[in-house]
Image (cartoon, rainbow, N blue to C red; front, side):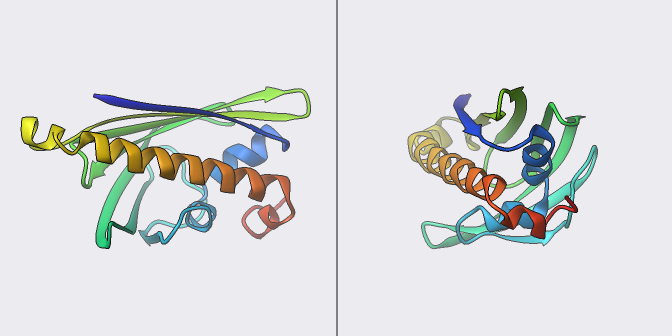
Length: 153
């Protein structure tokens, strides 16, 4: 199993950052070329969402379900269908002076056994770039004024 971890300091209240991270339309706005084909608004325990995005010019879908939820501290989503053999993304939010530390912990495996593992390095590289892009875009969203488009203050 491969793992990607990232820590991002965000100058915004923990509740705002947490809610933006679980908001479908905010997620789409902070990911390149992604659209939601199922799910909308704020996700909670047991909710499912399906995203579609091209990877290397090929459209892929990933359906995920929120399986752990402790607002505003932590939530975890897992892939229910998609390109990975398995994928789990734990989001944690620590309140610190002047803002929030958001942590992403993504664990994934490739399908097709040994044959699938040949693509693991490319998948890890691409997934790392997406996690980094999303974290930076979410930081900008939460620290600016555009967050109000998604949350009621």
